[in-house]
Amino acid sequence: MSTMNISLPNTLKSFVDEQVSQGAYGTSSEYLRELIRKDKDRLHLRGLLVAGATSAPAAVADAAYFEGLRKRVRQTATVDKVGKRG
Image (cartoon, rainbow, N blue to C red):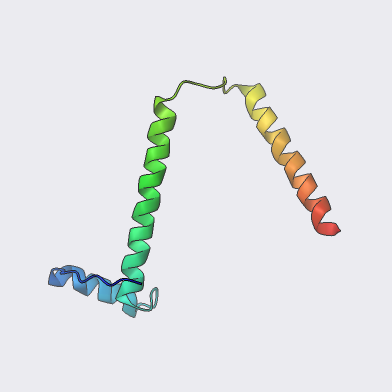
């Protein structure tokens, strides 16, 4: 694992230290890694949303479309249950 030194204003360092002291994270590095992971996920989701918003519609999202989705979910759930019993 690589290391990186960062400089924080006292207010931000105090905030990070508080998060660690509350027991949510073991170290300040864990806290910052989690923030970076969340930001990475947020950016990935944003990219997917932008791509979806700029793409041509693939199907009409009417009642029949959603019923088809529900049917697929029910079928998958049934297959999963049967597979777990065996």
